[in-house]
Structure formats: C-alpha cells, structure tokens
Length: 491
Image 1: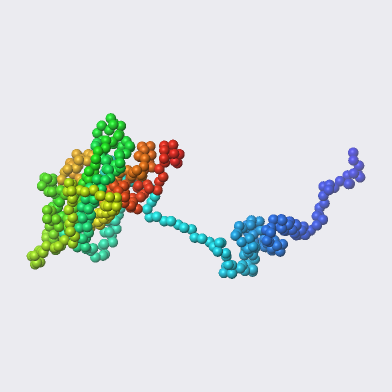
Image 2: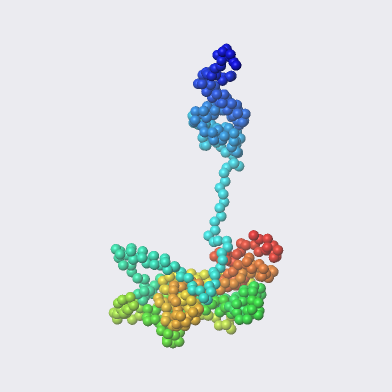
C-alpha cells in the first residue's frame, strides 16, 4: 500500500500544464495580428507588379487592414495585371483605385498616337431579309385566312364604339356616298395603262424568253427547258410518276385572268342568281379602275354628282340633281392604251432593246400592283374564302356558283371576305433559274433553289435588274452546291 508520504504528494493538476498562462492574452492577439500582417506583406511583395513599389504594397496592406480596400481590388491592383496598349501607364490604374487623394492624369493630357485611335465598327443594315419562303398554296379543302383576324376586328369595333360616344360623327368616305375620289382618277388611268403595257410587253418578251406550261396541271416554268422536279398533280400523275409534260405557255398562263361582274351602279341592288348570265364579266382590275373614275364607252356606269340620302342601313335615295347644269363630258387625264393584236406582235430586235423592254415591264408590273393596292383601300374588293371568285363592290353578289369544297352545304353561295392584293393580282410563282446558260437544274438540289413571280422571272432572264423585294424569295445570296455529295455536307 502506498504510504502517507505518497498520498500527500497527489494533486488535482495535470502533468505538464499550469493553471495560468505565461503571457497576457491581449499581448498574444496583438502579436498574432502583427505576424499575419507581416506575412501578408511578404506575400504581396513577392507577387506584386513590377511597376508597383514597396510603398504601394504597404499602403494597400494598410487599406486592407482598415477595410478601405476590398480583397478583390487587391487582386485587381497587384496580382492581375491589366492588358493595356501603353505599358508605361499601367501604374495609373493603381493610383486611381487605392488612393483617392492622388488624381489620375487627365484624359485631355494624354495624346494618343494615330494608330491607337479607337475605330467605330461598320454596321451594314438591310431592310430586306436574306431568305424568305414564298407564299404557301392553300388546299382546296382549306378556307383562306382573313386579312385581319376576327378577334382583332371585334376588339377594334368595341374600342371604336367606346371612343365615339362623346365625339362628333366621322364623315363617310366619298365611295360610300356614291361619289368618286377626284384625286384618284389619274391613278386609275395609270393603272389601266400599266396593265395594257404589261400585257403588250410580256407578249413580246415571250417571243425571246422560253416559257413552258404543263399539259396536265397549272404549273409553268421559265427557262430553256422544263424543270426536273416531280410535282405534277394532274391526271394520270401516278403513271407518269409526277413528271410534267411541257408545252408552250401563253399570256394567260403567266397573268392569271381574274374576272368580276361589271356593276352599272356600285351601290345598287346585289346581283341575283338568275342574273348571272345577263351581266357582263370583265377583268377585275379593269372593273376597279372603272369604279375609280375611268370612262369606257363599252362599259357605262352611273356617276353621281351629289351624295346619296340614306334612309337606313340598307336603303337610300338619290339626291335631286335637277338644279345642277347638264354634265359636260370631261376630257380624260390620260390617253387609254390599247392591246396589240396577237398577229402584230414583234419581238425585240437586239439585246439592248430587250433589256429596255424588260425594265419597262418590271416598272409596269410594280406600278399596277401599287396602284391597285391604293385603289382597293378606298373602293372595297371582296373575295370568296373558298374559291378564287372576286367581286369589286361593297358587298358580294348572290350568284350561287361556288364550286369549292363542300359547296353543297352552302348551296353554292360564296363566303365573302375582304380581299388582299394577291387575290386581285395573283402572282404565279415559278422556279428561279440561277444560270440560264449554265448547267440545268438538278432534282436533288431542290431545297437550294428559289422562286419568283413569273413576270419577274421573265424580265430577269431578259436582262432586267432584280428588284430588292424579290431577292429574298429568289435566294440569290445562297450558294448552290455543285453536286449531291457537296449538298449532303451542308448542315
């Protein structure tokens, strides 16, 4: 057993430790801070920029300790050098950031060399897109879309009714009163002459530019030979495996004839079904020009000199014009051109005359389209939503001659809606031949070829410049592979 001496030597202290520390805790904390600061100063000195001095490192270190400079700025100022075109001015970045007392050099004092002047980027803007798909062909079983959706029409009508509650009544345009717009009469004559010029020039150009038409379907092609695409949907197409049988085209194949009933009074009663054979039918563009003010002796029309007196929405009476003097026949502002007979057509003699004729044809085509668009905005034009029937007037006729899909359910009546320019002047889109004198078109490269209206394609092959609005659909900016192997590599 242990003796009393050994028991007296047992204590509660752990061997090798004492109850009190040899140093003061405050002094130890201050010593640690000094050691850490010194270590950080040495690290910054070893990794500092060559341009930064030891004094700069000390100031940065003091700023970090006081919280004036963030650690991210230390990395930016000392550790990550900024790329600059002036190596001698790198130290300015340090002076601008860590010390607000030192002002950086003014920009006006820095004279930059000419070869270091910042240059502005050249931006090329084009209003026309590079690649646009041509208008789609709607199925015969599908109804045409409205130019303006029904939802938007109803929303606009509600807003118009709400805003017109406390405002004066808006006057009706002259066509709704039975009058003509005097300022549009010269335009109507220009549109009629442009149509005649277009037909005469196309007949002459088709003597030198070959135009082919399929004998089984309504597809045409402008070029030395027909295209090889199997897109025929005519009779016995399965036997021919979709191949076309090309024949010589006529002017009716290029300019699709769109006819409409001639109205003696555009505000009169609607044409009944039993009157459909007694009323003459003329081209829709000619009828639009007549209603706009063109005087043609063979197609008389009623001209009012006073606005009508409307009794209700569907009934009106003509104003008394007995107090007015007798109407004097006015001299037309333009001379009406006549179409050249088919036997008197003379092709252009040389290349220069052909190019001039092609430019005039393009100009007449654009003038007719723009003029018809402006006239149709004042004089309403209707089109059937199921078939291509067009009627120039405020309301459609009642002739039950619609033969579109499921016309039996409508008893042959048309579904009238507002017409667009393509309904009045339908463009016949054809494949654009990139090089007339080069290699023929290949069936495997069909996705790389573009399309254009037949009138434009004839004029372009005759030597006219391509209008900007058709460059996107013709895909002139797209490279065409030389063979099928190269086409498979296109992503």
